[in-house]
Image (cartoon, rainbow over all chains, first blue to last red; front, top):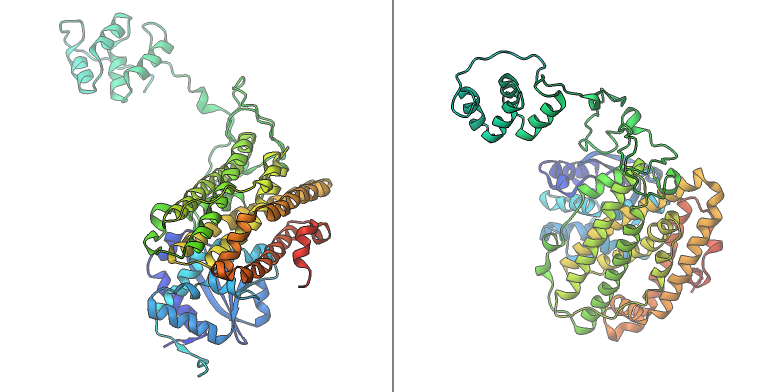
Length: 145
Length: 410
């Protein structure tokens, strides 16, 4: 079972969304999304109708992404467990809601126009994380009791 | 149809039409009266056979015969096929299919800095002397261009959605009256803004010459998006037992209405107002009270982020090529900010509706007003970042004071 966060985990999502036309139906997406969980960073690239590459990068490398999603590990775990339970996130756990309600923002970038990719292709990124409902996840950091 | 005429022999029938020609004409649904007229005017039966074999319609055959001279063989001009346009073009398919950028090959991809052609001639087509003038007034690339136009157009086509069926309207359940009324007010004013976008673009899109078809294509998608947003927000207002609210003051729309040039309109719509509206769509998605609102606002935000992307890149292109217009663009922004700030003060219904929405209800409106201040700060910061990315550094120093006030420490 892939562990979150890990390249293997994100690759598992990539494999799920590549099996059918769920991303194709949403239209083209050209963006590099970063994900930061504690001190780990990952880069997920979307090009045309596909999620093309996944790799682990140094945290400093997040600056090259269009934007990156950063939240404490427990927030990530809550979101993913909610998606696993329901197939799609309840409203408090959508990417948009987490971002709006976080005073620091969930989606971050030094360049607002690049950060706007988070909104411009929002449905694609949401669909990507929704694919976690179709895999089994082990969390690297257990949720505090 | 070949120029060479081959002989055929055929038996005549009553009416003077050879039997084999009659049979062929009837099989091709040609009126026999046409055949009779053509033969009477001296057209050889062999030529009519050729026209039928080539699959021409009677009209096409008549035109060919008229050009050939009475009784003579067919002469096709074909001059149109020999005009001096670039030939041998092969566009390459990419991962996104055959895109508008992919066909910008060779001279067809040369987007000139000036396009004085007043006709509807497609870029790259041969000039027809005396073509009808359409009276375009915009023929400067810098006035309208952005390097991302082609990709934005294709994205708009790819990522389109249908409010009637792509929003899970069935997930809307009755809300407390204050919250439903607040959403109705917000939707009312979003409808008005999208009306303005339709009005503004409808006025300016016709002024742009066809040398910049990418601009016209993209603006067409924005028109379509604005219509769709109007439709979707009106539907939300009327979907749950509430209704529309009060008409907005419209102050923020005045500078758009009065824009004297395309760049003024584009600055006000795509760089300024759309930036604030995008934040509003983020609010709608973030505080969605049901899946329908979540989907509606996030889909609308996708479109709006695309519009903003044009605003940023167009401004950047304009300032790179016409840097002397920097202060002019700043003035447009200042005027827009002034009216936006005025709207913010005078539009009490919208302000209160947002506070109710942010606070979670009328009873929490006090908390809502506090959150509204935070939200305004967020709007202004995002707007400033986009303006600076577009090439207007240090715009914070020029920001309209009432908007700058949101950035001061609490």
